[in-house]
Image (cartoon, rainbow, N blue to C red; front, side, top):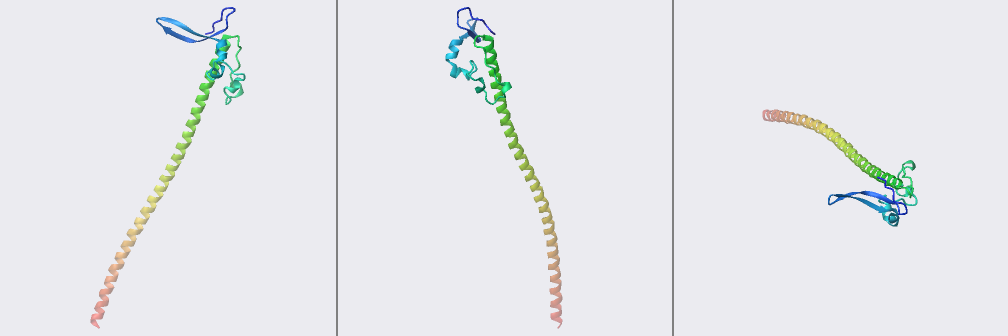
Length: 162
């Protein structure tokens, strides 16, 4: 809400409303006082620095807040709103970057898990093949043991008959 200052008084800017004992109080600050607070208050978007692009260097040129007219309360408020939106945009971009990084991490974990799953499946197939080969070899060994026992018995019979 823009409010024009009375003639001869320093310009004011409305910073919001508060309620006190049933009355609404209008929070007002003089622009002169605002400029004295400039180094700290600029980062809170109350007043522009000499170069507003320095407030948001990561924004494209067309998205940069335009410097306000210092004699217009509405211009100062629009500048403040633009700066707040730019800060929200910056925060959203940071959040997107963090989420994209997390997505990359999760995709890497997923790829690793799928690779391990594939490795586990391959190992399971190899285990089954080796188990089958082991069973076949044990069967062959038992047949060889039986055959050897038969040969030993035949040999002993021949030795006894000679």
